[in-house]
Image (cartoon, rainbow, N blue to C red):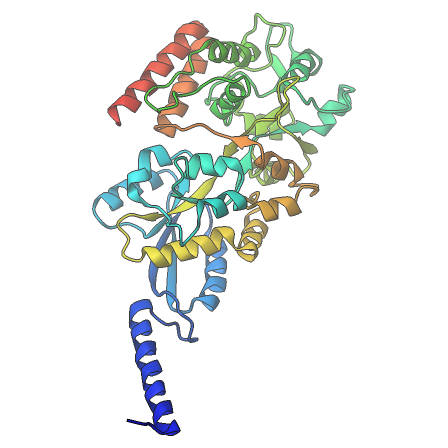
Length: 429
C-alpha cells in the first residue's frame, strides 16, 4: 500500500505525539516544556536564618517552578534529638542539615546520591579531600557541604604591639616560646592577662576539644582503627599531645597562661585580656559585635615545626536527604543547587560570611584579605570519624579537666576516654 506525503506526515506526527505523552507521564514535564521534577520539599536547618535560605530558594524556584521548598529553622539545642524522633516516626524533613561528624551515627537515616546525580569523580573535583572523608568515606556520597570552616589563630594587634612582638607565631614551637613574653601574672600567682586561651577544658576554652583533636592529627595520632572497630588515640603520640596541651594550664610550668577559672575564652579575648585564641571564621563577626574597638587579626593555624604538609581542622554543616522521604529526587536536586551552583554558593557566602566549600569559589578567595586564610586551609583540612561527636567532646573535655586538676595522669585520663569511646563503638555495631 502506497501512502501520500501528507498521510506520512500525519502518521509521523501522531507517533511523535504518542511518544511525547509517554515521556511526559514517565519523566514529568515542567511548565516550560523541559523534562524536570516536581513536589514539595521540607527542609530543616539549624543555624541559618529563614531569610538566608529563602533567598536561595527563590532563585532555585525560578529555574524549577514545580518544586516547592519549605525551610524550617530548628532550635540548635534540640535539633539532633528532634530529627531522630521525627525520622523514627516516618515523619520529619525530606532534607536536613548534617554536621560533618554525624555520618557514622546517622548514615542509616540518609538516602545517598546516585551516580546520575553526582559521580564520585565529580564530587572529588568539586570539594576538598576532607569532604570525601566525612560525607563519602566508602565511595558513596551521603551529604553535600554548605561551607567549610577551619580553626585559625586570632591575635590581638594592640597586645602584640605593646609587647614588641611584630608577627604572630607560625608553629607550636614559636607559640610556646612567646607565652612568657605575653602572659601577665600577679605576685600572688593570678593571671592578669593571658597569652593564649589554651590548656583549659570546654568549661573555659571555646572549641578546646577541637584544638586538642587538631594537634593530635598533626602529631600523627591514629584516632581509630582502620576498620572503625575501636578507638586508639591513647597512643604515645596521643599522650604526648595531651601533655603538651595541658601544660599551658599547669602553674608549675614556664608556659602557664590559662586556667578554667578565667572568663570564657571568647569573652576574655574580646575584652582585650587574652593575646591569642584559636577559633573559626564565624566567630569574627561575634568578636566585632562584642567589642567594635578590638583590633585583632587572623593568621593561619599553627603547625608543627618542620612539617612538610600542613594539617588543619574542619568544622562545617552539609545537607542530606532522608531515607524515608517521598520527594527525595526534588530534595537532592535542591541540595545540589544549594551546594554546587556557584551563584547559590556566592549568595550564601555573602549572606552568612561562612567560608565556601567548592573548589572554584575557594580559588577565587585565596588572596582575599578576610577569607584568604580560611580558603587556603580548606584544602588541607582533615577530621576523623567519630561514632558520636557529642560523647567524644564530653570525654575529651573531661580528660583535659582530669589532668589539669591533678585527678589523673595524662596516661590514665586518655586511656579512660579511649575505653569509653571504644565501648560506644562496639555497642553501635
